[in-house]
Length: 295
View 1 (cartoon, helix red, strand yellow):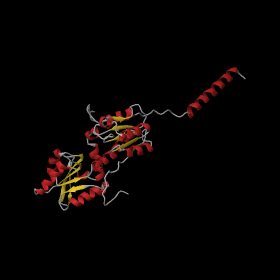
View 2 (cartoon, rainbow, N blue to C red; view 1 turned 135 degrees about the vertical axis):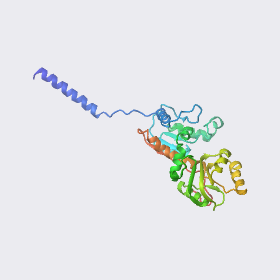
View 3 (cartoon, helix red, strand yellow; view 1 turned 90 degrees about the horizontal axis):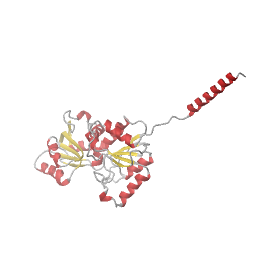
């Protein structure tokens, strides 16, 4: 055999062999890290990131690889367990993980339940990111967007005031029942005449103090809130009704008053995170009525 032909044949076979090996080798996938997810959130929320904020990484490290993301209203132990079971090792929560708005550890550092929750997070390799201030600060507010969509109130929203809504006239009782049905609320509380005609509604999701609760109430027939101090805004509304004002207050419960906002957050995250699954995990309403026990 011609030595030159043999050499060329050997070279060709070697090249084909290398090509085959290259073809069957799986392509390397770049790992998505917790820090990269946070950076994308900061970019896409499209407002300046505050120096003083509760929006921080509460558990885990920036370089942890992300296998899946759970968006939730509150990182309860139940939610964390469900996230771990589904392989979602990064939890993005709107409310605190460790029982205070700032997730301060000092008051509860020796508490056995805190330690159990902390240990669960560590043992299951979870990262928890608190996403509150900037989700509210987004334009439009992420929580409000999700709640308005879930309630079907988009067409009723005032173009100049995102908290104000106008509806065809109905009774307070019927309006409140419609909200409770749409959101599956077990323990909504209502102050006011059940037959009070309702047209103008102010909504302030989450916690609402006496101020701005008073000016909100002045603009509408009923003010809808997540929660408020009973010795402040609740007493004020009671006195307003006693004085002859045609007013009402609907108290939804804090969790259910913002939950749909984190459902929407999961959809928003999918717009710029495609490498891993992103799911919404609902935190269950904590209260139940004695005449309707939880099954």
